[in-house]
Image (cartoon, rainbow, N blue to C red):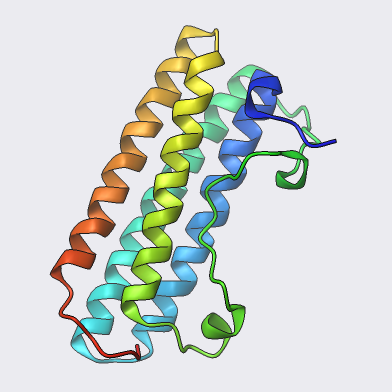
Length: 168
């Protein structure tokens, strides 16, 4: 049976947050590599934006992992994203082949990232509502603010884009 965020233990919330940040960093790195291969100026700029975001996501994952280790040491957590009822930040494409074949447009990649960052903000905002530990609540509040900044970053990139007819 899938669980709601509010039913998660503090250990499980940290575990999910770490997993989410690391997974998204990897996806953003994949986007960066893909766009870097196009070699035109605009694609390289988008690649640099995705690499910057991947670095930030990895940093968030490190902060969360450090907090997890402080509190729980090496205790494993068996919870996976499959166990969660609510949607967690995941950059998703409706058509996976677009990514595999490198056919995703710059605009679509930025839109996917924007939705993911908005989802991350919702996750962190949600868990602050039921987290009783003041230090964790402060951490999740800070993470929600970072994710809001990331969403603004991608919104700005989308606004700066020239209307493009398809392609990447």
